[in-house]
Length: 265
Image (cartoon, rainbow, N blue to C red; front, side, top):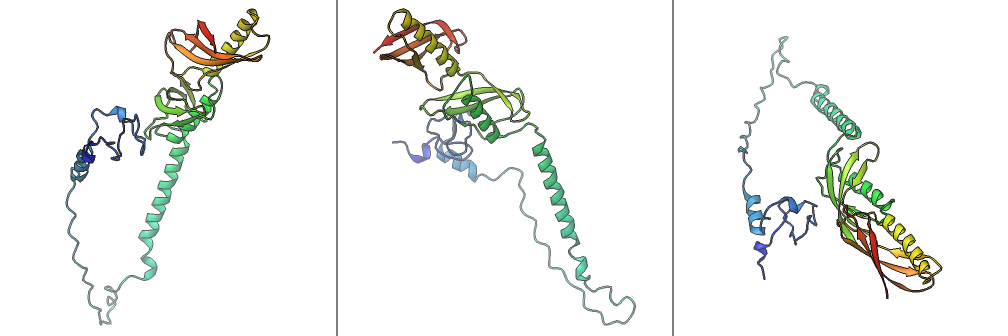
């Protein structure tokens, strides 16, 4: 059994990597690293002092207040403390500066500029996958914390569906206006493929007088494109009978390639 000090961990938070693509604690993209550090290596790096740090300056000596003057001359009050109503002035100036800084941050955040916006990307990709032509049931998308929401950027996240299928989602940000628009690059539009195959299967079974009704085809909600590969689905006839159908994919790996094979169980 591997010693705990030799377990490979996330270089950001120190959580066990467990052969995952992303850290289960902080979402860091583990694939972007070369060799992950061990627990002992990570701990040693944390114990090293930061470069460029300097020891704190010694505290200044306590201020010596001048003795109270007993002189009755016009300058007798020169050494006295300032009236209390003058002392809060620096605090008022500091508070005003903080208010201005907060307003600037709000304006920048509401301007719609690029930058990291994990929650916005996750929510928008979930909406894209739930809609046509993907039709993913109850999609859940998880993106790394440093994902960039900028036009032209390729984002890579992880998705899961209600039918238990999972897949990595690669999408290009085509627009940042409004809620943002994304073009999914690597997933099969299963809703469109399922609908087309259902129609063809119904026509096929009717031509062979196997059925006079409809044929329902069910394909995985999430499936990554496989150029010139196959997509395995199931079918059921309205009048009884069910089985599997292997749909051939074209060179893009996303659309039917013109042939398929059905096997009745």
